[in-house]
Image (cartoon, rainbow, N blue to C red; front, side, top):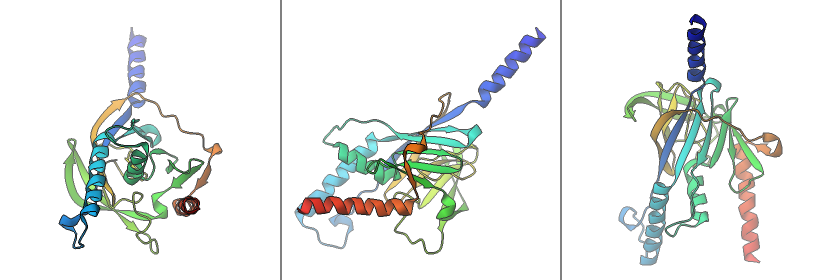
Length: 252
């Protein structure tokens, strides 16, 4: 009987230690400015176009969800967007653009203190990212409650010479993390703070956690040997060349 009790205790400890977390996030895309909040005079056609884009963004903000599975024991997490079929006048292209606006990469594997972002457009590449290459975190005294968890605000202090051009959808403007959730998790690339990130604000979107729960899901990372690994600066140059090539074909 004594050995049976010991076995049950050990089994419980093993199950508890193997527990992972699932975080679901919702993103609110920022609307583009129109005639009502811009000093520039817009034509009726221009205003109608902006209204149409903002309506699409509102629909995509409601439809798109980000699921993150975090494994505390390994300090790793995996990010995936929910699968959506084009609905309500939204094309697959609309959804792809929205995903890029929200997190820069719609698929991220974080392990070995590095985030590996998989490009939607240049699908032969993986972008390897570490925050230390771009900025240092400044943890402030600001506090607020998200999902019943006390969170603290952190802001990136950019390295000298970096500039702001690299930040769109990549480096956040600010994040809110929960120390009580003592593991790495984020709705985007950077997660190296002492607690899961429950809110992540960029120049194009604010991404907030809408649920956190314990799960038994395991993580299976993509093998990296079939991809070309680049940093974000290299990726931006390759993307620029890609779009330039597309434009040249259109002009022919």
